[in-house]
Image (cartoon, rainbow, N blue to C red; front, side, top):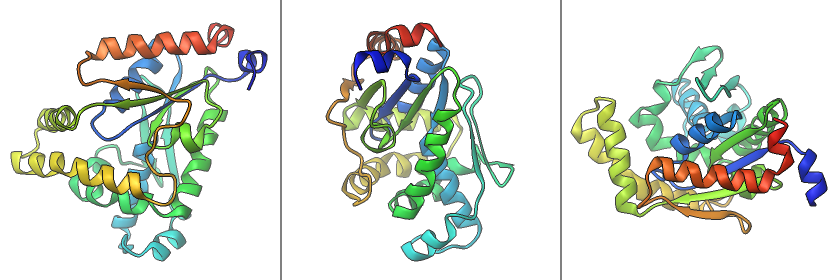
Length: 239
């Protein structure tokens, strides 16, 4: 896309990275600062996984998951000040963060039919975002939004990511044994998501790498907001 085309294209900021890199917090904060919509695509995959488990679908059976994935009605609210996620009209923002869903979401996400269905929903969310959108996940820049205004790959050391995840879980009042197990699960999930055949976790060739290990949240937000302004040009001023 040339400069003239980009000036009139919707602003799409694609932020990818592994668990614990700060994607959700950073993406939502950038969206709030720039007045853009916010899309947590990981919540959509968790919602799909939650529905599969709630309906006794064997998530280890890829064919069964593929057949069933068209049934749930998943709606992702994109208001950065209060994002929502519902399945068949039910608010599942809490249930989808439980350990059972966390343990199975990588398997469900690896099913091509699931990704096809949710990518369509994700692109639909961007199309109706009047002021542009910040979308975070694991294949936003590489697959879902290949022509994004800006692509960012957030990363951090494994130690930093594990500690952040543990702190996040403690803030939710979870038992220490559960916290230890879920924090230790980071490496397994990263390996599964990076090695899957369909849309693996990977840095897009034209993405900007931002290592957050030694940066404060505000420093990361400042860095990405500046990159958006640089890439979007006059398109940002019109949103």
